[in-house]
Amino acid sequence: MKRRTDNFDKFVPGKKNAAIKEQFRQEKKKWKKDRAAAIEVTKQRKLEADIPKPITIKKKVTNDQMPLNKYVAHSGICGRREAALLVKDGKVQVNGAVVTEPGHKVSAKDEVKVNGKKISIVVDLVYILLNKPKDYLTTSADPEGRKTVLELIKNASKDRVFPIGRLDRNTTGVLLLTNDGELAQKLSHPSNEVRKVYEVKLDKPVAKKDMEEIAKGITLDDGFIKADAVAYADAKDKAVIGIEIHSGRNRIVRRIFEHLGYDVRNLDRVVFAGLTKKNVDRGKWRYLSEKEVRALKFFGADSKKSPKKKS
Image 1 (cartoon, helix red, strand yellow):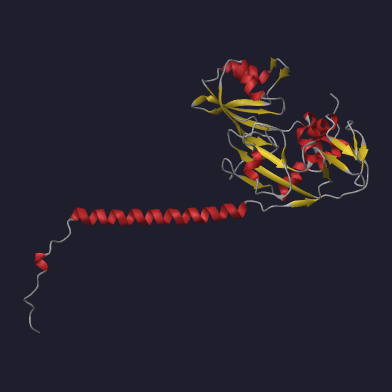
Image 2 (cartoon, one colour):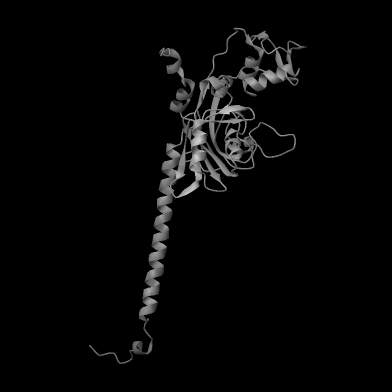
C-alpha cells in the first residue's frame, strides 16, 4: 500500500486542553439540567397522583321542617350565621312573603327566595382547601371591587361555595371552602374549639416574659384570651413564633402581639381543624380527600359521647 503523502492534518490546530475541559463542563451541565428536569416531571406527576380528586357527597333532601336560616345555609350560599343576618335584614322570602325570624320553620315544599332569587337545598356537597395568599378578602363578594378568595377557586366547582371562618386580608395560609352549611356551622362554633396553628413573624425578638404572659393569658378590650400553646418556631430567630389557639375572635393573634408592643410583619395559618397546606403552593387549592371529610364531620364526636369525669 502506497503511503499517503498529502496529509495536511498537522496543519490543522488541535483543541487545547482548556477548550476540551470547557466542552466537557458544558456537556455535563446540560446533562445535569436535563436530569433535574426529568426528576421534576416525575416529582410533579407523583404529587398530582397524591392530590385528592374532586369528591361530592350526596345530601338527602327531605320534607322535614327546619329553621329558615338553616335552610338558607344548606342552599350553599353562606354559613348559618350569615344566613340568620340575611333573614333579619328582610332579604329572605318564604312563599312570597318576607320573613325576618331565622327560626321560622320551612321545608323543601316551600318556595324560598334570597334577594329575589329562588334557592333550594344543595344536593352535592363540595370541600376545597386553599392556601390563601395576601391581598385577598375572605368573603364571597366585595362592594369595593377588591380581590376575593373565590377568584382563586373559580374553576374548582360548578356549585357555589363559601369560606369557613375568616382570614383577614393580609393573613395567609389554610382556608377551607365548602357549600356544606352544617359543617361550616360546626367548625365555626366556639364550643367545638377548633384547633388553629399560626406562624407569626414580628418586627423584633419576643421576650421570654411576653411568651410566658401569652401562655398564662392576657386581657384585651373584648375579654380574656389564653393561647393553647406558644413557642419559638426558630431557635435562631426569636422573632418567629408558633402559636396554637382555638378562639375565633376577630384578628385575635394580631391583637395579642400588638397588645404586648410588637408589630406583626407576617401571619400564616399552618393548621386548621387538622388540615395543613402540605403540597399546596401559595394561591393554589386542592379538594379534600374522603378521609379528611369524614374526619371533619366526626370532629369532636368522641368528646361529646364520653361524659366528662367529675373531679
